[in-house]
Length: 564
Ligand code: TEU
Image (cartoon, rainbow, N blue to C red; front, side, top):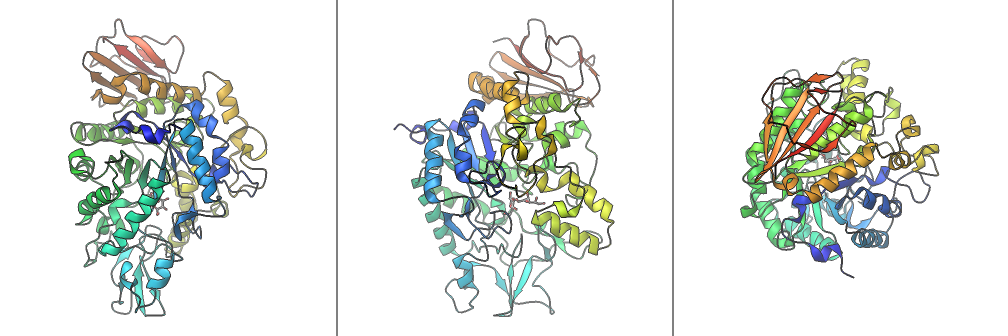
């Protein structure tokens, strides 16, 4: 069988669109209320009809599920909740038969505290003691002032030895010590094992946290908090590039043309440019976080909500386009399993504007230069969960934040508002397949309830409607495959100060693609000048029939082709 894996060619991922599946919420094959691997396999024809090139699978490994599988107790087994290794083999084969490649989530900044490595490491005399970050306490407390991403100190006291271990996420996610070469060798061996099993690449969880300053220096706390937010103290450590290059060599990542995308919260443009400079042999692309941090108060963490004027968002994406134009490569995303739903966040999820705004956000993102990522349900215009009580949340980050903030004296209403806007469970409600009970996701009771708007927002209805968000995404993917300018064209932002319209060009030789997108819920006028001559322009994709002229309807967007 000529599998897609055999056909990997250098740089293939530049013209690819990646679709992220969050297994817990995609499709439940056995009726236990939790999505699973056979469920995903049963829906591959849907993904083939959408036309995506790559499936990125969030973790399905053995896990106590403290963080929904981002706490791994065995990298080389599948959790029974999700299936078996045979099921994964069937999924990979099913993808390859449909020319879809498979990218696994690689979570190696930390393991679960129930991983055999950590269980051994708890014994101070063990050869694995040094595989994690163990330190004595300071002044009767934690070894330094770092705060976990999931609230509270990043250190946990282990009674057995009287020492603390570092966990940048939950206390059930101890950080691996990458200074130890044996740790690195074990990780690379595990990665090779997955490559041999047929996977086509890795999405690397918080990979810019693997290198830490071994002196573990205190961070500078922000006003009103005694703990220093860990990210600013620990990200982008001194040996990061060395470790990434070593991993690439030892696993043969470039040699085998595997897709590599490193998740890097706190990454700067310079760091991302170096990490994705092909000549250095580290990564293909990174997930940077700047554009998903603009709607928060600077330095106050994600829960401190702030308005986001369009010019700031445009300027930020343009900065990354320009910064990686000659060296490196961008990943493009609005959504993932950690972010609220794009249409609720950057669009308008009212009945009136949901469809047009979801399409327009899709056009804007997919026409930037880089590899676009579609998060399950984004192609349907799925919306935030609309939770109003803490009892509806399941995510450890949300529950810890709520308890922490309330105990520090914050108003419950404000905390619930932040959660409703930013909570990760917004993205984790079941995929909406049809209008039946539980949205066709499960025959049992789903672990998170389906959004009641499944009666209108669902894959079955979207596939039957040629004007749906689904078909708009399908066309965007087709356009990328058909037009080299979508992949390689040079980016230029137009009308940077326009408060409603996102306008830009992509130019390759004498071919110009022009995007005009009204990113607001009121009509917008384009009389500002600053646009190319549109005579003879061909409408390649629009959100309204027969558009034209100089007024854009609310959330109307047009993709125009000029010259070439
Ligand atoms: O996320 C890391 C990360 O920096 C954030 O997105 C984080 O989840 C949180 O939202 C900060 O407020 C990765 C995974 O994508 C996430 O699901 C895991 O919980 C986390 O790492 C730990 O593995």
